[in-house]
Amino acid sequence: MRYPQRRGRLSVPGRTVLLATAAMVVATTLVACGGQSDSAPKAPATIPELTKDPLTLSFIWFDWPPAHALETFANAEYTKLRPNVTVKVKTVPNANWHDAMFTQFAAHKTDFDIPILDSQHIGEAVTNGNILDITDFVKKNIDVKAYNPYLLAAYGQFPQAETGKRDENASLYGLPLLGDTWTMIYRKDLIGDKPPQTWDEMISVAEKCQADNPGVSGLAFHQANGSDAAAVTYNTVNGVYGGNLWNPKTRKINGVLNDAAGHEAMDVLVNKMKPLTAKGSGNWFIDEVNAAVAQGKACIAFNWIAASGGLLDPKQSTLGTTREQILDKLGFATLPSQKTNLVPLGGMGMHVSAYSPEANQAEALSFMKWFEQADIQKKWAAAGGVPSRTDALESPEFLDAAPFNQVYTDSVPRMRDMWNVPEYARLVDIENTNVNAALNGAKTPKEALDDIAKEQQSVLDAAGGKGGGGL
Image (cartoon, rainbow, N blue to C red; front, side):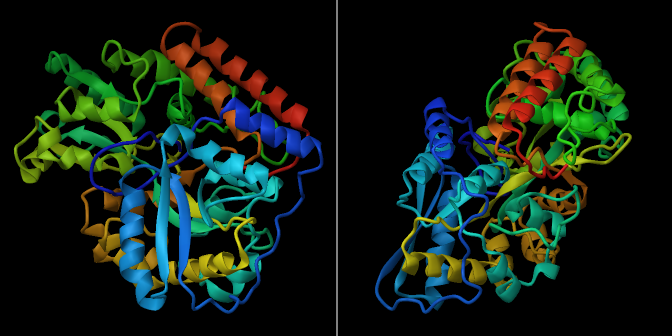
């Protein structure tokens, strides 16, 4: 999922930014001229001999607390193994994140060695041969049984397998760096200590809370037509009401997304949830939802766990003068279920630039092997990161670090991703625009959903390619 810059303690990260027209034109031109490849170049199974000379290992990410935490952590811990190496995490504004990587990819020259890609970026990068195929390296150096298989698939596999499953015969192009999902944030002092267990119950509780507390909205959630804000909101409701975003085997969206379950989900979102939001919230995203919670203006809210750290900061909250006072009023829970218990997958993986010098590629592989060890993952968790190894996710170092970390661990088996295809950017923009239009009354729920299905289907049909989706 695609995040803007945000304040607060590092907890869990998330995913993707808007694809700029200029970068898309460059990438499309390269493909048309034969720049596309069916497979990425392969990394060696065994890490080549590492240099003893001073070396800077460069990452690229967007500018937010996890990026700075990663640089600090790596320079404190990885240099114990490789004292001649300095780790630099180059940061760019979130809005430029995708383009900062893919314009360099298009030029076949990068000033970074490890791009941190959103899971939906993988298809584009693999299709154009921008990152290394690390399948053989993973088989020899990584204990894949230590991970939930879907996390390995989401952050590294292309094409992706069915949700919750990893195709062991498919190639891997990355390894997990950080994960994320939505948490339900609720006012314990207004609705009680026990969070709603079903989506329908949640709507009912929010409606009563709004009626009982003038000036406080029942719900706060992402509605903006930008990044993947409105799209993730609809996709989440679609999932819990039993809908599907597409059929990845047949690449069919029209008739799948807008089936009976899909229309029920859009009706719930627009006609039951939207009336419980604050006036003027039709373009809210992460920061606006957090502000509503921190100012005591929402009974129940949904946000990425990665964005929730600032809610515990008394300097940013009117709910208490200490962290403990805030936690007396705020609770964090996994999303309610309904017909299913699906939750959105966020997070990012580490990859190796195909255009990095050989010595740096070798160092990147060395770093990835080191980073994915159990003891290092637990140290990363204690430092504020979010590990993907099951033993680290269930460790006290992670679970005791923040009140919403247990939510992440409990949510991992429930995750569902979007379409992991090279056409991702166009698909998500179609969905954002139309869901936002429905939430703001410019289209009826039925019109919006049918338009999404038809327009997205046209994109896939025009591409004519093949690819999995993780759905």
